[in-house]
Image 1: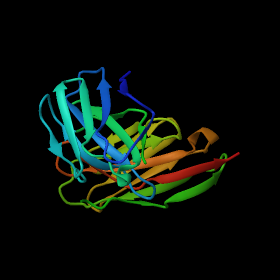
Image 2: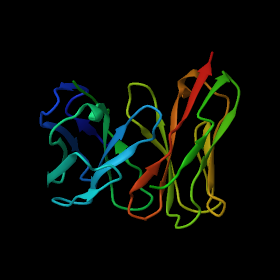
Image 3: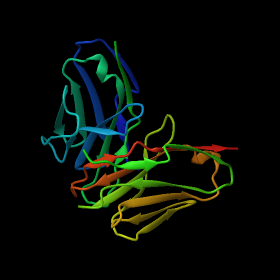
Image 4: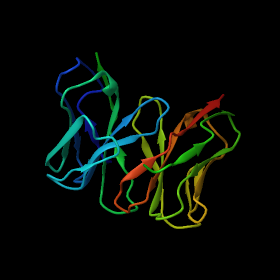
Length: 113
Length: 112
């Protein structure tokens, strides 16, 4: 089974802090994604990556950056955390190909105080 | 941002009853339609990835159909059980690059 591991289930940070959310997958997938989930909204794509050192902006990239130095690891960075970034963050990985599903981590519930 | 609509937003179903709900998406530039089940305190789990018009897929008591020409997919649960309680997410791939646009989900509560 594919395993997507997010570093923390719950995280509390302060406004202005630099925050790192880590995601590791063990299936050699090319594609990796970061989403956020907020009440009343669908999953929204922040950034994604098709390969090492590649990154593409999603629908809501403002205030975030990403890093993919190794194939198995995709990091989401909040450069200067703000309260409106309090959310549930989900990482996913996927093998290349149109009929491939995405495999999700358990999520990180991030609170910015 | 693509508009993927799911209806109804939430529904309560009596145990043993069957139910269905709808995902609507833009019918142009279709590549794939995904369904996921997201149970509370767990990660979303893939149910189906559908690519062909008229496709029907089945997994246990859950099945899905796809109409790409009119832009909708139905998800059916036959003989609902309490373990079917979850949010069912629909997602649409219009670029053929695995970038998905998600709907808000159908929240299903099965009442014992």
